[in-house]
Length: 249
Image (tube, rainbow, N blue to C red; front, side, top):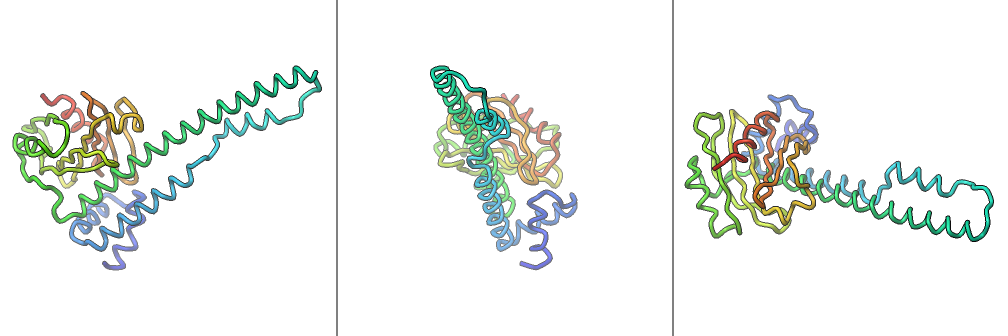
């Protein structure tokens, strides 16, 4: 590992390098295990700090409601005051429960996206990024039979700029799924497919576009499966591939 590359790793993870520098560092990570391990360690540290900072953090609306509830009020009868206090406490408890539930959902989504970014970076840095190497979808798809508890369809790429490189088994949490590797120009794209019952509640149920660190991401659910497309390629390229996957026969 050289000081030249080490000094750029944090800027790389924050997505602040130029496109040319991003490509150079991507190529370097594929052939330098120490740098790849350093990147993974920094990703995990950033994710842990981000998760810790979001835990139990009250929203501004919640704080305003608390301030209003404890502000000085005109004197009223003991019975009415007691009933009012009871209603206020019940309301605050309800708001607090909803707020905490929303925060937990956001944390779960952020954790899932961070794990997928880690998997994508690990693939970029790996000397053997796929376990089945083939540009033929009829070779790659059957390879997963018996290795994951579901099947999926792959699109025909003839006439497009995308190239299928191969695939491997991946895990999100403890759920096994497929990771397919595509290339477009000099960019490598990871397509992750998992059963939606293991990820749908945390991620959401509709098509979404996300930005995770320096990567673009597309995700959607279809036929009981949850798809994620992640890369440093443009959002338009990811949407094109996502559209082809959704229309795969």
